[in-house]
Length: 208
Image (tube, rainbow, N blue to C red; front, side):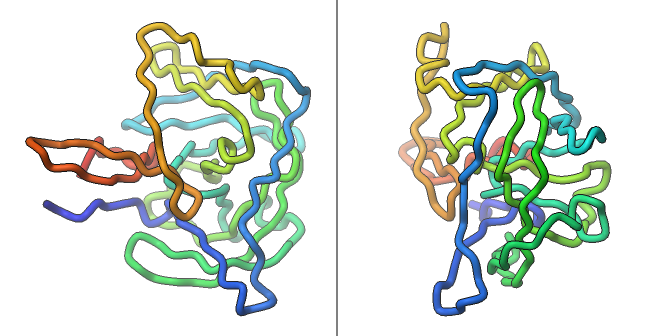
């Protein structure tokens, strides 16, 4: 069985408290208005989901990547000039560890919903990140929001209502466990073989 492979820009972030200058992971994202359910039109291209995010009147194209623990913006771009908060040690799929800056993004407009307090790591733009302006990570869910992707309708539905999707027809509940702030699920690919795998919308492969 080949090892599960992730995109290099799908970062798993962790914190080492032994270094005072390193910050901690945060999913303190606040959504306004409250008690809402919003629908956002998204793109579906080459088995990946792209979300329009408006910042300061300019619309950016973000990859929605549940394999990333929080947002990513690219060095040398306007969003990377947001106020610096701290740094984190990031671990990529190749096992490399780097200290990266963490910035607090200006309010993000996602559909009719404004997100405050979004943090992002600043990363060099890799080969796999061409055609996108940044990455939205799983901290949207960890902050308490509920998300539904409807790729037939090309829609992302986002809500702060805890039970918003509890009564979906023909739905299957998929429980996950967090590791490095991203979701892992158990699957049985064949026979009695059980695998614990990352639920990663940033990967184009269903399973590898």
